[in-house]
Image (tube, rainbow, N blue to C red; front, side, top):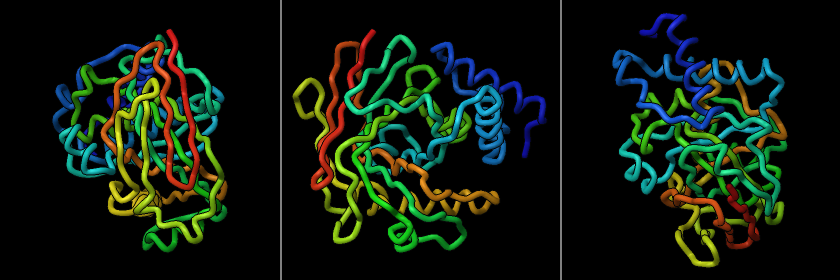
Length: 263
C-alpha cells in the first residue's frame, strides 16, 4: 500500500459523500497517482464499513468491466469487483429516481444466486455452476461518481465499481442444461432495442466472472456465502438513461425484467 491510512479514510468519506449527494468529481488518482491496487480496494472496503455502520446490509457482489465492449468503452483492460447493499435493490418493474444519481447508465446482466458458499483460490466455472441455485435476468444501474465517466481502474475500484442500483426479474432458472454462453439478450429502452448480446460476451462465460470474484475474495480471506446474489457483469456497452425512460431486459430462456426512471 502506498497511501497513509488517514488518506484512505478521507478518500472513502469523500467518494461516498459524492454518491450520497449525487455530486461528481475528478478521478482520485489525479491527486494520488501513487495509489496501488491495495489502496483502491482499501478505500472500497472503508466505504462498505461506513454503510454497514449506518445499518445497510450487504445483499450481493458484482463483477464489473467484464465484457470486451465495456473494457473498450471505459478504456480499461481488466475486470473489477464491488459490493451491493440493500438500498441498491429495486423491485422488478420499480422506479429509480434520477435526481438521486449523477449520470446513470444501464447494463444487461445475468445474476447468479448461490446455494453453497464459494471461496478461492482455485475456483473455476465448474465450481460456480455446482454452487449456483439459479440464474436470473438483471439490469444494473451504474453511476460513476467521476465526471463524464472518465476514470482509470484504480479510481473505479475505489468508487465501488460505479455501483448504484439493480433489479432482478424473470424466472429463477436452474443452470442445469443451460448454455449460458449462447443465451441471447435484448436490452430495450422505451420499447426499442438499444443493445444486443450473448452471455459469452462476459469473459467467454458469465460464470468465469463469478469464479474470478470468488478467487479475488479468497485471496483476501473472504468468501461468497450461500444465498449471495452475484451480478456477473455487463454483456453489452452501458446505455445512458434519463427521467421518463422505461428499460426492459429480455434474456433467452430466463424471461425479462424492467425498470423505470423518474425525476
